[in-house]
Length: 96
Image 1 (cartoon, rainbow, N blue to C red):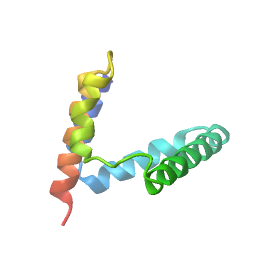
Image 2 (image 1 turned 180 degrees about the horizontal axis):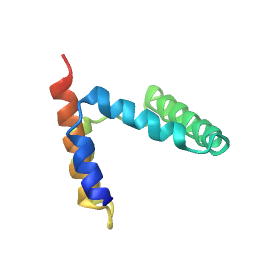
Image 3 (image 1 turned 60 degrees about the vertical axis):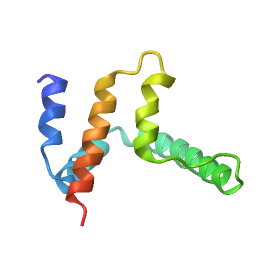
Image 4 (image 1 turned 180 degrees about the vertical axis):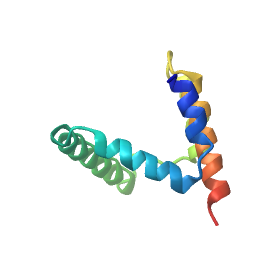
């Protein structure tokens, strides 16, 4: 199947169904590799949070961050930004 077709189909799912799908994909990854990836992301997240709390970086709204991505990266596919924006809007619509 074409990845664009799969993306479009996945974005039609509810937020809960998308989370379930993410979980299935996440669990399908090699667990040995996933442990290394999880540790790296945990360390990165902790570093970023520490920098935020120390006032070294400022938080910006998610929509603004996504809007700025194409200008900050030369080869960033616009489909990714559109997909992220669509996902965020769908999540907000599904939220109480």
